[in-house]
Length: 463
Image 1 (cartoon, helix red, strand yellow):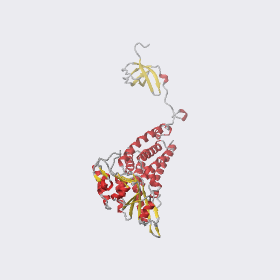
Image 2: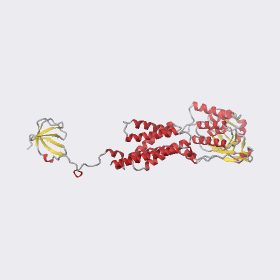
Image 3: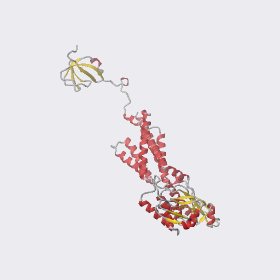
Image 4: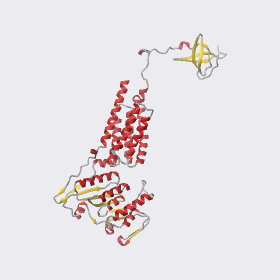
């Protein structure tokens, strides 16, 4: 039995080691698999970089744009063309992307291909110039909450209105038009310019032709090649910098529903490996789920190695607690460390904590169901003595006392319900079926089970 337990412990420690290695490997910079742009200087001068901004504005897109601009700079690129086609996204990442674009040494032209709504408009306004595709639209940049309703937070609204106004004025555009795209309470008469009056209760959106008239676009072009030709760079080499497989995967992983599922699989896998040891597969699957969780957040630029270290330390302390009891101290510290690792890996700690609680509840239910179907393998069985101390194994069983059944005696003490009685010359410890019997009462033995002698009172009418 000890050999079996040692094998199970070894299996559990192997799974832990494997999990730690996977988690640490997951956040190594090499996992970004980005094919960096080669330094490209054509015969006719430095190259032009084309970078797509075609997803929701969030952490992964910002991380990609940051990488793309760095690679463009390393490649000696002269000009960047941003292909903007997005419905918007998070204000904080739009603000970061705008700062990156306007402060970079390489000039940027935003080519609005389709729609540049909300945060997409702000990104385009931070470029040096804007070119729009026929039938494309920009604007409708009011801040909305998670339910899609207009934000009622005055601080956020004030910040965003000011940001849009400032971005518009960077290149001499009318800031009031940008404010009208954000503030539903604004009133702006544009009848002379585009034949429309933006009234309170609505936010402004403009077409390519309207943007050209209002000075919000410098040119209208059908495609990227036409934009580059308009810039006078048609003879330059073009470098396309696209999101890598890792970045596309990260965008999927950090989705709130997907990351909750990964947490459920991760927690359930590790718990099953600890409680029903020896399988190996649950622990490996759980480790891979956690690796994907941290990998996605690392690629998104919101998780650092410290989050993984906190998680691994927490997991290790909880496992150590199972084998080296510390009255719960190691378990509590490990639990706090594990939770901190998961929460700090997200750019939304509150949302991550809620996802973790949901995942924990579901994972515990799954673990209990699995443990019940594998009772013979459960870790708590190591505390149960399974060997039988039989006579065949050389053990002497307790003396059988069935021969005493039917013997009569007297209670020497009050039976409450246990006490002492005298049978012949022998004092015997006895017990009733639950009733109390007074001292001196006559007794009869009714049953003998091992060392237990059961008695009842002999009534006066007993024959």
